[in-house]
Length: 392
Image (cartoon, helix red, strand yellow):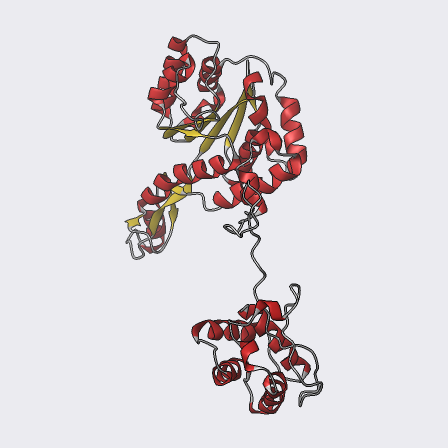
């Protein structure tokens, strides 16, 4: 039986009879019916009475409704073994004899059966029922589709899933300290300054604690021609990091473009539009090593110190591998962790045989697949795991 449908229908009749029962009582009744076998009228009666009746004044209304529902009913219709052929296929309420009842309500019992499963037909056309066909949720289905098959609305819906994953971004201990009475360390500067009022006798000890700040994140996204199918989704990924974790985001093809101000716009569509206009060299060639070196030499290179660096690219680079190795070695010495997101890493039989990818891989902590939104969510969870566990 469908316990939820039965409980809702019974509570609805009780409410129309004057009994004060709400969502809490309905949930209690559903849980009570799942515990007891509910094979007899007495078990159903006490399950409903204990969960629905809160006041002595409601007992009369409950007794009237319960008697009107179950009196003169066919006992066989209350069991799980009821004959399906005895009622129409689309009937979810079992009729019972008697046009009148003490509750003054006519119609079927509030006892609904579960809908029949959708049987999957085999290729031979056999009508025999097979395994029920399970339909996934809408977001779960979209998360496994390639990026080029998603429209703007679907990308925005899946972006909210990424934002929920990054809501609790870990914090790290900084060198700065703040006044806190629960701190373990005595602040000498503030204690001595306070002691000037008491003839330089440290009557009051002022304590301090380290200030914890969010772990800095820096994202570099490849927007070259080979990454055309993934560019829109990766821009949404960078916008989530820019708005939730205050990360610095850059796009590169032949030149390096800072997209942090554009992607921090409140509107997702306008942020993506501004970022697309700012990246004037998108869908062109690729110079990964030159752009990483340019970022290290720029004023924004200090943001890489102790930061979590994510590079989203397929590894196709027109620069020589030696230059890629030199740039990645400098980046690895400055960053906390380097994660490479490759949209082709999840393909069957993938091997990093591209010269640029092979030169950069020894300096990466991990290389993760990023061909779908499901891959991006998994990648975010993987990179957050050591940060949360170490409380860095």
